[in-house]
Image (cartoon, rainbow, N blue to C red; front, top):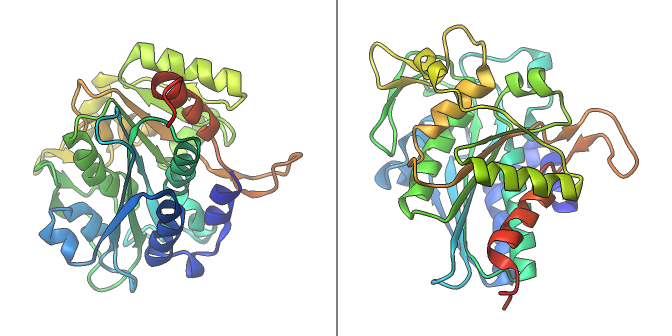
Length: 319
């Protein structure tokens, strides 16, 4: 938890994509994990076009952080975390107040690194993979534009309805790669939408899941760990709000209503229906101090996630 808070609280000038990759190495290497980082133009060579598109305007190149750990034959558990180290909104520029806390927009990436540290420290018998697309959404002459059409790693074309909905763009390439290995459990964490905060407030992360039994078990773990969350629906009729006349999908809905749901539905396009998948849309920040919880970066749902993974895959099988 302290690790997650420190990563989120570090100013964006000291926690860009390169620094986030270095933090991942500091976590992974003492545990014997393998770390690879694909950087800059190499993202195009390795077919991660949306990560490249979002991050290419920044001085610090975008990258994909990839950690693997654990016994090769163990159940695959894959974590994907949004690593937008600062979000200006891109050409759809945020207001000053909207931009103020955007050093925390890599909170999802911080969460999966913290959770990975817990899993490795406990020596759970899983084949762990962690994917963190790390970018800065900046404004420059080569920034991606509203109404650009981008081809994703999966081959789905995306019309950019808003450059400030960049998190789902970098996440979709990472989710495609994660899903390719048919993991037993796929989890993503992201500070994705203000709509989730409007619906549930700052202290209650939104949980979306494509499997009812898994969702019920996760909710039970959250209740037992006193690590709250609330399930929201993957309401398929809202998928039409993401329709595009020039691409397979738009990255935002035209009206904006149900924004947390449409964002989750966008991500679901990149996950196979048979993959057990949890998506968490979180604030990752305390706006007011409480005992043991100062103002600033905060780990949310991480203890619940660890309890779920330990219950499903780790009990009685530690090395």
